[in-house]
Image (cartoon, rainbow, N blue to C red; front, side, top):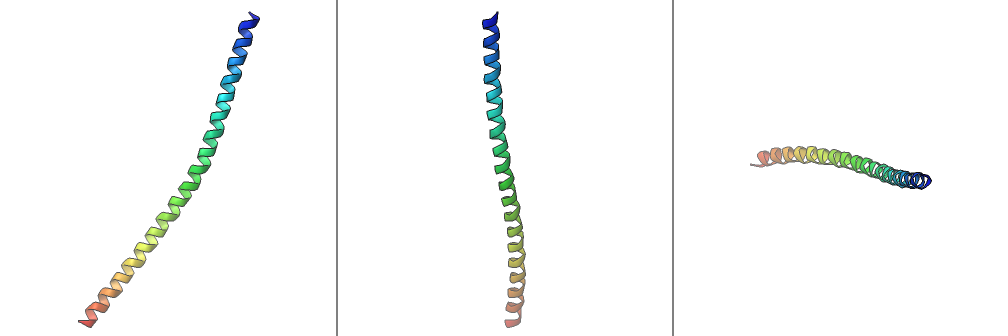
Length: 69
């Protein structure tokens, strides 16, 4: 009986170590994901600003072209 109990305790310890390992990995992935999400948000803002600037420039060029003809 004592041998069975020792085996179960070792199994429980192994499972606990695995769970802790997985939990640490998931926490690291969460941090990485948060960093990438912030990067993507910044990229979206940059693209929107760039598009706005290009559209404004296109309007100016079109007006200048119309004036020169």
